[in-house]
Image 1 (cartoon, rainbow, N blue to C red):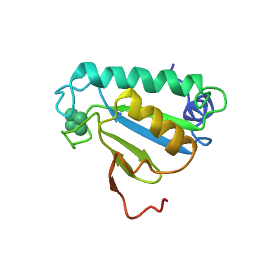
Image 2 (cartoon, rainbow, N blue to C red):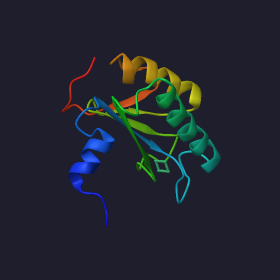
Image 3 (cartoon, rainbow, N blue to C red):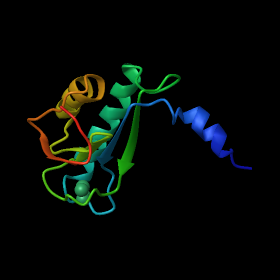
Image 4 (tube, rainbow, N blue to C red):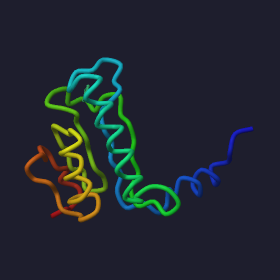
Length: 123
Ligand code: FES
C-alpha cells in the first residue's frame, strides 16, 4: 500500500520550504543543453543542497528535475519560485551562485536571470 498524502507532506517537508527550483535536465530530447551537461548540473544541485543542509530533516529548498521547461536554448534552464525567476546557463558554477545568492540570500542573480514573472515580487 502506498503512503498517505499526509505522510508525504510530513516526510518531504512540503509545508516548510521557502523556495522551489526546477532544473531542466535528463531530457527525453535534450535541446537547451546536452544530456551530460544537464545531469552534471542536477547532480551538483542535489549534492550542494544536501551539503548545505537545505534539504533533509529541516528542508528549506525543494528541487525538481524538469524534462523540458520549453525554453530550449542556452541551458541548462532553471526557474525558482515563489519569485518566478528564470535562469539560463545553469552550470555547476552558476548554480552555486544561485544557491548562495538567491536560494539562501533571496537576491536575484541578475547576470543569469533572463525573465521574471511580474505577478510575483522580488528584489
Ligand atoms: S530541453 Fe531544456 S528547456 Fe527544453
